[in-house]
Image 1 (cartoon, one colour):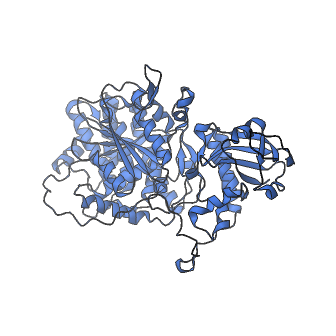
Image 2: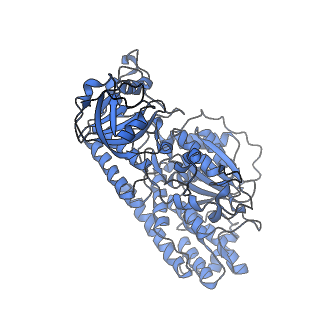
Length: 583
Protein backbone atom coordinates (compact mmCIF):
# COMPACT_ATOMS: atom_id res chain seq x y z
CA UNK A 1 0.00 0.00 0.00
CA UNK A 2 1.18 3.49 -0.89
CA UNK A 3 0.10 6.79 0.66
CA UNK A 4 -0.57 9.81 -1.55
CA UNK A 5 -1.25 13.49 -0.96
CA UNK A 6 -3.71 14.85 -3.52
CA UNK A 7 -4.20 18.60 -3.84
CA UNK A 8 -7.89 19.13 -4.61
CA UNK A 9 -9.22 22.59 -5.60
CA UNK A 10 -11.83 23.85 -3.12
CA UNK A 11 -14.61 23.97 -5.72
CA UNK A 12 -13.88 20.39 -6.78
CA UNK A 13 -13.66 18.75 -3.35
CA UNK A 14 -17.45 18.50 -2.72
CA UNK A 15 -17.80 16.68 -6.05
CA UNK A 16 -14.96 14.34 -5.09
CA UNK A 17 -16.82 13.36 -1.92
CA UNK A 18 -20.18 13.09 -3.68
CA UNK A 19 -18.97 10.97 -6.62
CA UNK A 20 -16.19 9.19 -4.73
CA UNK A 21 -13.89 10.06 -7.60
CA UNK A 22 -10.61 11.95 -7.55
CA UNK A 23 -9.81 13.82 -10.75
CA UNK A 24 -7.06 15.99 -12.18
CA UNK A 25 -6.49 17.85 -15.41
CA UNK A 26 -2.86 17.48 -16.43
CA UNK A 27 -0.45 18.12 -13.54
CA UNK A 28 0.12 14.78 -11.81
CA UNK A 29 -1.06 12.68 -14.74
CA UNK A 30 2.09 10.55 -14.92
CA UNK A 31 1.97 9.76 -11.22
CA UNK A 32 -1.70 8.78 -11.48
CA UNK A 33 -0.61 5.69 -13.45
CA UNK A 34 1.28 4.54 -10.33
CA UNK A 35 -1.83 4.63 -8.11
CA UNK A 36 -3.14 1.14 -7.34
CA UNK A 37 -6.22 -0.29 -5.63
CA UNK A 38 -5.66 -0.37 -1.87
CA UNK A 39 -3.57 2.81 -1.84
CA UNK A 40 -4.68 5.58 0.52
CA UNK A 41 -5.13 9.21 -0.53
CA UNK A 42 -5.24 12.25 1.75
CA UNK A 43 -7.24 15.14 0.31
CA UNK A 44 -5.45 18.47 0.71
CA UNK A 45 -7.53 21.60 0.02
CA UNK A 46 -5.01 24.33 -0.92
CA UNK A 47 -7.37 27.27 -0.57
CA UNK A 48 -7.92 26.50 3.12
CA UNK A 49 -4.52 24.78 3.62
CA UNK A 50 -6.11 21.78 5.33
CA UNK A 51 -6.35 18.02 5.18
CA UNK A 52 -10.05 17.28 4.65
CA UNK A 53 -10.22 13.49 4.56
CA UNK A 54 -8.70 10.10 3.85
CA UNK A 55 -9.79 7.81 1.02
CA UNK A 56 -8.92 4.30 -0.22
CA UNK A 57 -8.41 3.66 -3.93
CA UNK A 58 -10.77 0.96 -5.22
CA UNK A 59 -9.98 0.78 -8.94
CA UNK A 60 -7.44 1.51 -11.63
CA UNK A 61 -7.12 5.04 -13.11
CA UNK A 62 -9.42 5.77 -16.04
CA UNK A 63 -10.42 8.56 -18.42
CA UNK A 64 -13.77 10.35 -18.40
CA UNK A 65 -14.42 13.76 -19.98
CA UNK A 66 -17.73 14.28 -18.17
CA UNK A 67 -17.45 17.38 -16.02
CA UNK A 68 -17.61 16.80 -12.26
CA UNK A 69 -18.06 20.55 -11.82
CA UNK A 70 -19.45 22.78 -14.60
CA UNK A 71 -16.60 24.37 -16.48
CA UNK A 72 -13.96 22.18 -14.81
CA UNK A 73 -12.12 19.85 -17.24
CA UNK A 74 -10.49 17.08 -15.20
CA UNK A 75 -10.62 13.84 -17.24
CA UNK A 76 -7.94 11.76 -15.44
CA UNK A 77 -9.68 9.94 -12.60
CA UNK A 78 -9.67 7.16 -10.03
CA UNK A 79 -12.46 5.69 -7.92
CA UNK A 80 -12.11 5.80 -4.13
CA UNK A 81 -13.88 4.68 -0.97
CA UNK A 82 -14.14 7.25 1.85
CA UNK A 83 -12.24 6.15 4.96
CA UNK A 84 -12.67 9.36 6.96
CA UNK A 85 -14.44 12.44 5.62
CA UNK A 86 -13.94 15.22 8.14
CA UNK A 87 -16.62 17.87 8.66
CA UNK A 88 -15.33 21.27 7.66
CA UNK A 89 -14.97 22.45 11.27
CA UNK A 90 -12.63 19.50 11.95
CA UNK A 91 -10.34 19.90 8.92
CA UNK A 92 -6.70 19.59 9.96
CA UNK A 93 -4.87 22.93 9.53
CA UNK A 94 -1.48 23.19 7.84
CA UNK A 95 0.37 23.93 11.09
CA UNK A 96 -0.95 20.70 12.57
CA UNK A 97 0.76 18.36 10.11
CA UNK A 98 2.79 19.86 7.26
CA UNK A 99 5.97 21.57 8.29
CA UNK A 100 8.05 18.52 9.21
CA UNK A 101 6.66 15.80 6.96
CA UNK A 102 9.54 13.70 5.71
CA UNK A 103 8.41 14.14 2.14
CA UNK A 104 9.85 17.66 2.45
CA UNK A 105 13.35 16.16 2.65
CA UNK A 106 13.09 15.55 -1.10
CA UNK A 107 13.28 19.32 -1.61
CA UNK A 108 16.21 20.18 0.63
CA UNK A 109 17.59 22.47 -2.07
CA UNK A 110 14.84 25.07 -1.58
CA UNK A 111 13.87 27.29 1.29
CA UNK A 112 12.05 25.45 4.11
CA UNK A 113 8.92 27.56 3.79
CA UNK A 114 8.72 26.68 0.06
CA UNK A 115 9.14 22.92 0.39
CA UNK A 116 5.54 22.04 1.11
CA UNK A 117 4.49 24.29 -1.75
CA UNK A 118 6.63 22.14 -4.05
CA UNK A 119 4.76 19.06 -2.81
CA UNK A 120 1.26 20.39 -3.44
CA UNK A 121 2.20 21.95 -6.78
CA UNK A 122 2.66 18.43 -8.12
CA UNK A 123 -1.05 17.85 -7.30
CA UNK A 124 -0.50 14.13 -6.66
CA UNK A 125 2.52 13.24 -4.54
CA UNK A 126 3.72 9.95 -3.10
CA UNK A 127 4.32 10.06 0.67
CA UNK A 128 6.86 8.10 2.72
CA UNK A 129 5.18 5.44 4.92
CA UNK A 130 5.96 7.38 8.11
CA UNK A 131 4.14 10.44 6.73
CA UNK A 132 1.14 8.33 5.81
CA UNK A 133 0.92 6.85 9.30
CA UNK A 134 1.21 10.28 10.94
CA UNK A 135 -1.50 11.76 8.72
CA UNK A 136 -3.68 8.70 9.30
CA UNK A 137 -3.42 9.25 13.04
CA UNK A 138 -4.08 12.99 12.75
CA UNK A 139 -7.22 12.44 10.68
CA UNK A 140 -8.55 9.76 13.02
CA UNK A 141 -7.89 11.94 16.05
CA UNK A 142 -9.77 14.86 14.50
CA UNK A 143 -12.64 12.55 13.62
CA UNK A 144 -12.96 11.46 17.27
CA UNK A 145 -11.99 7.83 16.76
CA UNK A 146 -12.40 5.49 19.72
CA UNK A 147 -9.37 5.09 22.04
CA UNK A 148 -8.51 1.59 20.80
CA UNK A 149 -8.34 2.75 17.19
CA UNK A 150 -6.23 5.74 18.21
CA UNK A 151 -3.79 3.61 20.16
CA UNK A 152 -3.51 1.26 17.17
CA UNK A 153 -2.69 4.31 15.04
CA UNK A 154 -0.12 5.41 17.62
CA UNK A 155 1.59 2.03 17.44
CA UNK A 156 1.58 2.20 13.63
CA UNK A 157 3.33 5.57 13.78
CA UNK A 158 5.95 4.23 16.16
CA UNK A 159 6.59 1.17 14.00
CA UNK A 160 6.87 3.31 10.88
CA UNK A 161 9.25 5.68 12.63
CA UNK A 162 11.44 2.78 13.76
CA UNK A 163 11.53 1.40 10.22
CA UNK A 164 12.17 4.73 8.52
CA UNK A 165 15.75 5.74 7.65
CA UNK A 166 17.19 8.61 9.68
CA UNK A 167 16.50 12.07 8.36
CA UNK A 168 19.44 13.76 6.64
CA UNK A 169 21.28 16.25 8.80
CA UNK A 170 21.01 19.91 7.88
CA UNK A 171 24.12 21.12 6.03
CA UNK A 172 26.55 23.38 7.89
CA UNK A 173 25.79 27.07 7.64
CA UNK A 174 28.56 27.67 5.12
CA UNK A 175 27.55 24.71 2.94
CA UNK A 176 23.82 25.47 2.74
CA UNK A 177 22.66 26.25 -0.81
CA UNK A 178 21.80 29.85 -1.44
CA UNK A 179 18.18 28.92 -2.07
CA UNK A 180 17.92 27.23 1.32
CA UNK A 181 17.07 28.93 4.62
CA UNK A 182 18.02 28.14 8.23
CA UNK A 183 16.21 25.21 9.87
CA UNK A 184 12.47 25.75 10.31
CA UNK A 185 11.45 27.37 13.56
CA UNK A 186 8.23 27.89 15.39
CA UNK A 187 6.59 31.28 15.40
CA UNK A 188 8.18 31.96 18.79
CA UNK A 189 11.67 30.86 17.77
CA UNK A 190 11.72 27.28 19.11
CA UNK A 191 13.00 24.57 16.81
CA UNK A 192 10.16 22.66 15.22
CA UNK A 193 9.88 19.12 16.55
CA UNK A 194 9.35 16.11 14.35
CA UNK A 195 5.61 15.52 13.88
CA UNK A 196 4.81 13.21 16.73
CA UNK A 197 2.18 11.44 18.71
CA UNK A 198 2.05 12.22 22.38
CA UNK A 199 5.46 13.18 23.72
CA UNK A 200 8.27 14.24 21.41
CA UNK A 201 11.30 15.83 23.10
CA UNK A 202 11.92 19.35 21.78
CA UNK A 203 15.11 19.57 19.76
CA UNK A 204 17.83 21.93 20.82
CA UNK A 205 16.06 22.86 24.06
CA UNK A 206 18.06 22.66 27.29
CA UNK A 207 15.29 22.44 29.88
CA UNK A 208 17.51 22.81 32.94
CA UNK A 209 19.27 25.88 31.55
CA UNK A 210 16.00 27.42 30.34
CA UNK A 211 14.42 26.97 33.77
CA UNK A 212 17.36 28.70 35.43
CA UNK A 213 16.97 31.65 33.08
CA UNK A 214 13.27 31.74 33.84
CA UNK A 215 13.96 31.92 37.58
CA UNK A 216 16.45 34.73 36.95
CA UNK A 217 13.97 36.58 34.75
CA UNK A 218 11.29 36.56 37.45
CA UNK A 219 13.77 37.75 40.08
CA UNK A 220 14.90 40.55 37.75
CA UNK A 221 11.30 41.78 37.58
CA UNK A 222 11.35 42.25 41.37
CA UNK A 223 8.94 39.44 42.23
CA UNK A 224 9.83 37.25 45.22
CA UNK A 225 9.37 33.58 44.39
CA UNK A 226 11.66 30.86 45.70
CA UNK A 227 13.36 28.92 42.89
CA UNK A 228 11.59 25.73 43.91
CA UNK A 229 8.20 27.47 43.73
CA UNK A 230 8.83 28.50 40.11
CA UNK A 231 10.12 25.02 39.28
CA UNK A 232 7.12 23.39 40.97
CA UNK A 233 4.69 25.60 39.02
CA UNK A 234 6.34 24.81 35.69
CA UNK A 235 6.57 21.09 36.50
CA UNK A 236 2.97 20.88 37.69
CA UNK A 237 1.71 22.74 34.61
CA UNK A 238 3.60 20.34 32.39
CA UNK A 239 2.34 17.28 34.26
CA UNK A 240 -1.34 18.30 34.34
CA UNK A 241 -2.95 21.27 32.55
CA UNK A 242 -4.91 22.24 35.69
CA UNK A 243 -3.06 23.99 38.51
CA UNK A 244 -4.43 25.90 41.51
CA UNK A 245 -2.38 28.68 43.09
CA UNK A 246 -3.47 29.27 46.69
CA UNK A 247 -2.51 31.89 49.25
CA UNK A 248 -3.50 35.19 50.78
CA UNK A 249 -4.26 38.19 48.60
CA UNK A 250 -1.24 39.96 47.17
CA UNK A 251 1.37 37.18 47.11
CA UNK A 252 1.57 36.99 43.30
CA UNK A 253 -0.91 34.23 42.43
CA UNK A 254 -2.21 36.05 39.36
CA UNK A 255 1.16 37.47 38.42
CA UNK A 256 3.11 34.20 38.39
CA UNK A 257 1.32 32.71 35.32
CA UNK A 258 1.57 36.01 33.45
CA UNK A 259 5.27 36.44 34.26
CA UNK A 260 6.12 32.87 33.25
CA UNK A 261 4.18 33.23 29.99
CA UNK A 262 5.93 36.52 29.23
CA UNK A 263 9.39 35.12 29.97
CA UNK A 264 8.87 31.96 27.89
CA UNK A 265 7.19 33.46 24.85
CA UNK A 266 3.76 32.16 25.78
CA UNK A 267 0.47 33.93 26.31
CA UNK A 268 -1.66 34.33 29.45
CA UNK A 269 -5.30 35.39 29.44
CA UNK A 270 -6.89 36.37 32.78
CA UNK A 271 -10.64 35.87 33.30
CA UNK A 272 -12.16 36.98 36.65
CA UNK A 273 -14.61 34.44 38.07
CA UNK A 274 -17.89 35.83 39.41
CA UNK A 275 -20.04 34.41 42.22
CA UNK A 276 -23.01 34.07 39.84
CA UNK A 277 -21.25 31.48 37.68
CA UNK A 278 -23.57 28.57 38.43
CA UNK A 279 -23.42 26.73 35.09
CA UNK A 280 -21.05 26.37 32.11
CA UNK A 281 -22.54 29.34 30.25
CA UNK A 282 -19.62 31.68 30.98
CA UNK A 283 -16.94 29.06 30.29
CA UNK A 284 -18.40 26.91 27.49
CA UNK A 285 -20.99 29.27 26.04
CA UNK A 286 -24.74 29.71 25.69
CA UNK A 287 -27.39 30.50 23.09
CA UNK A 288 -28.88 33.97 23.53
CA UNK A 289 -32.51 35.01 23.09
CA UNK A 290 -31.90 35.70 19.41
CA UNK A 291 -30.75 32.10 18.91
CA UNK A 292 -27.10 33.02 18.44
CA UNK A 293 -24.38 31.00 20.15
CA UNK A 294 -22.11 33.00 22.45
CA UNK A 295 -18.86 31.09 23.14
CA UNK A 296 -17.51 31.14 26.70
CA UNK A 297 -14.05 32.01 27.99
CA UNK A 298 -12.62 28.47 27.99
CA UNK A 299 -13.99 27.66 24.55
CA UNK A 300 -12.57 30.89 23.11
CA UNK A 301 -9.17 30.24 24.70
CA UNK A 302 -9.10 26.65 23.41
CA UNK A 303 -9.88 27.77 19.87
CA UNK A 304 -7.27 30.54 20.01
CA UNK A 305 -4.61 28.14 21.28
CA UNK A 306 -5.50 25.60 18.59
CA UNK A 307 -5.02 28.31 15.98
CA UNK A 308 -1.50 29.05 17.29
CA UNK A 309 -0.04 25.60 18.06
CA UNK A 310 3.56 26.85 18.28
CA UNK A 311 2.78 28.98 21.34
CA UNK A 312 1.82 27.82 24.85
CA UNK A 313 -1.33 29.44 26.25
CA UNK A 314 -2.43 29.80 29.86
CA UNK A 315 -6.00 30.69 30.85
CA UNK A 316 -6.02 32.14 34.37
CA UNK A 317 -9.34 31.87 36.21
CA UNK A 318 -8.88 34.57 38.84
CA UNK A 319 -10.44 33.89 42.26
CA UNK A 320 -11.65 30.58 40.95
CA UNK A 321 -13.55 29.55 44.08
CA UNK A 322 -15.86 32.58 44.17
CA UNK A 323 -18.10 30.21 42.19
CA UNK A 324 -18.25 26.44 42.31
CA UNK A 325 -15.80 25.05 39.69
CA UNK A 326 -17.56 21.68 39.60
CA UNK A 327 -20.59 23.58 38.23
CA UNK A 328 -19.13 26.06 35.74
CA UNK A 329 -16.21 23.81 34.69
CA UNK A 330 -18.02 20.47 34.61
CA UNK A 331 -17.20 19.70 30.96
CA UNK A 332 -13.59 20.80 31.31
CA UNK A 333 -13.02 18.67 34.40
CA UNK A 334 -14.30 15.65 32.50
CA UNK A 335 -12.45 16.38 29.27
CA UNK A 336 -9.11 16.95 30.98
CA UNK A 337 -9.24 13.26 31.99
CA UNK A 338 -10.14 12.18 28.47
CA UNK A 339 -7.05 13.43 26.67
CA UNK A 340 -5.71 11.32 23.82
CA UNK A 341 -2.41 11.32 21.92
CA UNK A 342 -2.30 14.05 19.29
CA UNK A 343 0.38 15.84 17.28
CA UNK A 344 2.29 17.95 19.77
CA UNK A 345 1.01 16.23 22.89
CA UNK A 346 -2.44 15.24 24.12
CA UNK A 347 -5.81 16.76 23.33
CA UNK A 348 -9.34 16.15 24.62
CA UNK A 349 -12.54 15.16 22.89
CA UNK A 350 -14.67 18.10 21.68
CA UNK A 351 -15.70 20.30 24.60
CA UNK A 352 -19.29 20.88 23.44
CA UNK A 353 -21.84 18.11 23.34
CA UNK A 354 -24.92 20.08 22.22
CA UNK A 355 -25.49 20.42 18.49
CA UNK A 356 -25.18 23.95 17.06
CA UNK A 357 -26.47 25.53 13.89
CA UNK A 358 -24.40 25.03 10.75
CA UNK A 359 -22.97 28.57 10.76
CA UNK A 360 -21.76 28.09 14.33
CA UNK A 361 -20.62 24.48 13.96
CA UNK A 362 -16.93 25.44 14.02
CA UNK A 363 -17.24 25.71 17.81
CA UNK A 364 -18.51 22.13 17.89
CA UNK A 365 -15.07 20.74 17.05
CA UNK A 366 -13.08 22.78 19.60
CA UNK A 367 -11.04 20.63 21.98
CA UNK A 368 -8.60 21.23 24.81
CA UNK A 369 -5.41 21.40 22.70
CA UNK A 370 -1.95 20.28 23.84
CA UNK A 371 -0.75 23.89 24.16
CA UNK A 372 -3.38 25.15 26.62
CA UNK A 373 -3.44 24.94 30.42
CA UNK A 374 -5.83 26.29 33.04
CA UNK A 375 -4.58 27.97 36.21
CA UNK A 376 -6.96 28.94 38.99
CA UNK A 377 -6.07 31.43 41.72
CA UNK A 378 -7.57 30.65 45.10
CA UNK A 379 -8.26 32.94 48.05
CA UNK A 380 -8.98 31.17 51.31
CA UNK A 381 -11.56 33.22 53.23
CA UNK A 382 -15.19 33.13 54.24
CA UNK A 383 -16.38 34.61 50.93
CA UNK A 384 -15.18 31.65 48.86
CA UNK A 385 -16.46 28.11 48.32
CA UNK A 386 -14.59 25.01 49.43
CA UNK A 387 -13.27 22.84 46.61
CA UNK A 388 -14.95 19.52 45.90
CA UNK A 389 -12.99 16.30 45.66
CA UNK A 390 -13.73 16.24 41.90
CA UNK A 391 -11.70 19.43 41.45
CA UNK A 392 -8.87 18.66 43.86
CA UNK A 393 -8.36 15.17 42.46
CA UNK A 394 -7.67 16.65 39.01
CA UNK A 395 -5.33 19.50 39.94
CA UNK A 396 -2.02 20.33 41.54
CA UNK A 397 -2.29 22.87 44.38
CA UNK A 398 0.69 25.18 44.94
CA UNK A 399 0.52 27.46 47.95
CA UNK A 400 2.36 30.77 47.72
CA UNK A 401 3.24 32.90 50.74
CA UNK A 402 4.83 36.26 51.51
CA UNK A 403 8.12 34.89 52.79
CA UNK A 404 10.01 38.11 53.57
CA UNK A 405 7.99 41.31 53.83
CA UNK A 406 11.09 43.19 54.99
CA UNK A 407 12.86 42.67 51.66
CA UNK A 408 11.84 45.73 49.67
CA UNK A 409 14.92 47.72 48.71
CA UNK A 410 17.19 45.04 47.28
CA UNK A 411 18.33 45.89 43.74
CA UNK A 412 17.11 43.21 41.33
CA UNK A 413 19.72 41.50 39.18
CA UNK A 414 20.12 42.39 35.53
CA UNK A 415 17.46 40.55 33.51
CA UNK A 416 18.71 37.73 31.27
CA UNK A 417 17.98 37.67 27.57
CA UNK A 418 14.40 36.59 26.86
CA UNK A 419 14.03 33.03 25.63
CA UNK A 420 11.01 31.60 23.87
CA UNK A 421 10.18 28.03 24.83
CA UNK A 422 8.75 25.78 22.12
CA UNK A 423 5.23 24.66 22.90
CA UNK A 424 6.51 21.09 23.01
CA UNK A 425 8.58 22.00 26.08
CA UNK A 426 5.31 21.88 28.05
CA UNK A 427 4.29 18.44 26.79
CA UNK A 428 4.20 15.76 29.52
CA UNK A 429 6.15 12.57 29.10
CA UNK A 430 2.86 10.70 29.52
CA UNK A 431 -0.58 11.24 31.03
CA UNK A 432 -0.64 7.85 32.72
CA UNK A 433 2.23 6.19 34.52
CA UNK A 434 1.99 3.01 32.47
CA UNK A 435 2.60 4.94 29.23
CA UNK A 436 5.89 6.57 30.26
CA UNK A 437 9.23 5.39 28.88
CA UNK A 438 11.59 5.53 31.88
CA UNK A 439 15.27 4.88 32.42
CA UNK A 440 16.61 3.10 35.50
CA UNK A 441 16.98 6.26 37.62
CA UNK A 442 13.49 7.43 36.72
CA UNK A 443 12.02 4.05 37.58
CA UNK A 444 13.64 4.25 40.99
CA UNK A 445 12.24 7.76 41.50
CA UNK A 446 8.79 6.47 40.55
CA UNK A 447 9.15 3.54 42.94
CA UNK A 448 9.99 5.89 45.83
CA UNK A 449 7.14 8.23 44.98
CA UNK A 450 4.58 5.46 44.64
CA UNK A 451 5.73 4.00 47.96
CA UNK A 452 5.35 7.37 49.70
CA UNK A 453 1.93 8.06 48.17
CA UNK A 454 0.75 4.55 49.05
CA UNK A 455 1.85 4.92 52.68
CA UNK A 456 0.19 8.32 52.99
CA UNK A 457 -3.00 7.03 51.38
CA UNK A 458 -3.13 4.08 53.78
CA UNK A 459 -3.07 6.53 56.70
CA UNK A 460 -5.77 8.73 55.16
CA UNK A 461 -8.04 5.87 54.00
CA UNK A 462 -9.86 5.31 57.34
CA UNK A 463 -11.06 8.91 57.15
CA UNK A 464 -12.18 8.53 53.53
CA UNK A 465 -9.36 10.83 52.34
CA UNK A 466 -7.18 8.32 50.49
CA UNK A 467 -5.96 8.81 46.93
CA UNK A 468 -6.65 6.83 43.76
CA UNK A 469 -4.63 5.79 40.73
CA UNK A 470 -4.95 9.20 39.07
CA UNK A 471 -3.29 11.04 41.97
CA UNK A 472 -0.64 8.34 42.26
CA UNK A 473 0.26 8.57 38.58
CA UNK A 474 0.36 12.36 38.55
CA UNK A 475 2.52 12.55 41.68
CA UNK A 476 4.97 10.08 40.13
CA UNK A 477 5.04 11.87 36.76
CA UNK A 478 5.61 15.16 38.59
CA UNK A 479 8.74 13.65 40.14
CA UNK A 480 9.87 12.28 36.77
CA UNK A 481 9.49 15.71 35.18
CA UNK A 482 11.20 17.38 38.15
CA UNK A 483 14.17 15.07 37.57
CA UNK A 484 14.86 16.93 34.32
CA UNK A 485 15.52 20.19 36.25
CA UNK A 486 16.90 18.98 39.60
CA UNK A 487 18.97 22.12 40.25
CA UNK A 488 15.87 24.34 40.12
CA UNK A 489 14.30 22.58 43.12
CA UNK A 490 16.20 24.60 45.69
CA UNK A 491 15.62 27.27 48.31
CA UNK A 492 16.86 30.87 48.12
CA UNK A 493 19.86 29.77 50.17
CA UNK A 494 20.66 26.96 47.73
CA UNK A 495 19.41 24.05 49.82
CA UNK A 496 17.84 21.19 47.90
CA UNK A 497 14.07 20.59 47.88
CA UNK A 498 12.88 16.99 47.52
CA UNK A 499 10.52 16.61 44.56
CA UNK A 500 8.70 13.73 46.29
CA UNK A 501 8.08 16.07 49.23
CA UNK A 502 6.63 18.69 46.85
CA UNK A 503 4.48 16.06 45.11
CA UNK A 504 2.94 15.05 48.45
CA UNK A 505 2.46 18.69 49.39
CA UNK A 506 0.71 19.64 46.15
CA UNK A 507 -1.20 16.45 45.30
CA UNK A 508 -2.08 14.63 48.54
CA UNK A 509 -2.43 17.21 51.32
CA UNK A 510 -5.02 19.50 49.63
CA UNK A 511 -7.63 16.73 49.91
CA UNK A 512 -7.53 16.88 53.73
CA UNK A 513 -10.75 18.45 54.99
CA UNK A 514 -12.92 17.17 57.82
CA UNK A 515 -14.16 17.89 61.32
CA UNK A 516 -14.85 14.34 62.45
CA UNK A 517 -12.64 12.27 64.70
CA UNK A 518 -11.29 10.00 61.89
CA UNK A 519 -10.08 13.04 59.91
CA UNK A 520 -8.26 14.48 62.93
CA UNK A 521 -6.72 11.12 63.78
CA UNK A 522 -5.54 10.69 60.19
CA UNK A 523 -3.87 14.12 60.22
CA UNK A 524 -2.05 13.40 63.49
CA UNK A 525 -0.83 10.03 62.18
CA UNK A 526 0.20 11.51 58.83
CA UNK A 527 2.15 14.28 60.60
CA UNK A 528 4.08 11.72 62.63
CA UNK A 529 4.77 9.71 59.45
CA UNK A 530 5.97 12.76 57.47
CA UNK A 531 8.14 13.91 60.39
CA UNK A 532 9.71 10.46 60.64
CA UNK A 533 8.70 10.18 64.31
CA UNK A 534 5.80 7.69 64.41
CA UNK A 535 5.87 7.33 68.20
CA UNK A 536 5.82 11.03 69.03
CA UNK A 537 2.41 12.56 69.92
CA UNK A 538 0.98 15.12 67.55
CA UNK A 539 0.85 17.78 70.29
CA UNK A 540 4.61 17.50 70.82
CA UNK A 541 5.27 17.72 67.09
CA UNK A 542 3.07 20.79 66.72
CA UNK A 543 4.61 22.47 69.76
CA UNK A 544 8.08 21.84 68.38
CA UNK A 545 7.07 23.31 65.02
CA UNK A 546 5.49 26.37 66.65
CA UNK A 547 8.50 26.84 68.91
CA UNK A 548 10.73 26.93 65.85
CA UNK A 549 8.74 29.88 64.47
CA UNK A 550 6.22 27.94 62.35
CA UNK A 551 8.65 27.33 59.47
CA UNK A 552 7.48 26.16 56.05
CA UNK A 553 10.05 23.36 56.19
CA UNK A 554 10.62 21.17 59.24
CA UNK A 555 14.34 20.38 59.48
CA UNK A 556 15.16 16.73 60.06
CA UNK A 557 11.76 15.46 58.94
CA UNK A 558 11.37 12.67 56.42
CA UNK A 559 9.37 15.07 54.21
CA UNK A 560 10.19 18.54 55.58
CA UNK A 561 7.64 20.68 53.74
CA UNK A 562 4.84 18.14 53.97
CA UNK A 563 5.49 17.79 57.70
CA UNK A 564 5.50 21.57 58.29
CA UNK A 565 2.22 21.99 56.40
CA UNK A 566 0.68 19.09 58.30
CA UNK A 567 1.78 20.69 61.58
CA UNK A 568 -0.24 23.74 60.60
CA UNK A 569 -3.28 21.57 59.80
CA UNK A 570 -2.86 19.61 63.03
CA UNK A 571 -2.60 22.83 65.05
CA UNK A 572 -6.02 23.87 63.76
CA UNK A 573 -7.43 20.41 64.50
CA UNK A 574 -6.10 20.54 68.06
CA UNK A 575 -7.42 24.07 68.63
CA UNK A 576 -10.89 23.97 67.08
CA UNK A 577 -11.47 20.36 65.98
CA UNK A 578 -11.32 21.01 62.22
CA UNK A 579 -8.62 19.26 60.23
CA UNK A 580 -8.44 21.13 56.92
CA UNK A 581 -5.69 22.07 54.49
CA UNK A 582 -7.86 25.05 53.52
CA UNK A 583 -8.59 26.38 57.03
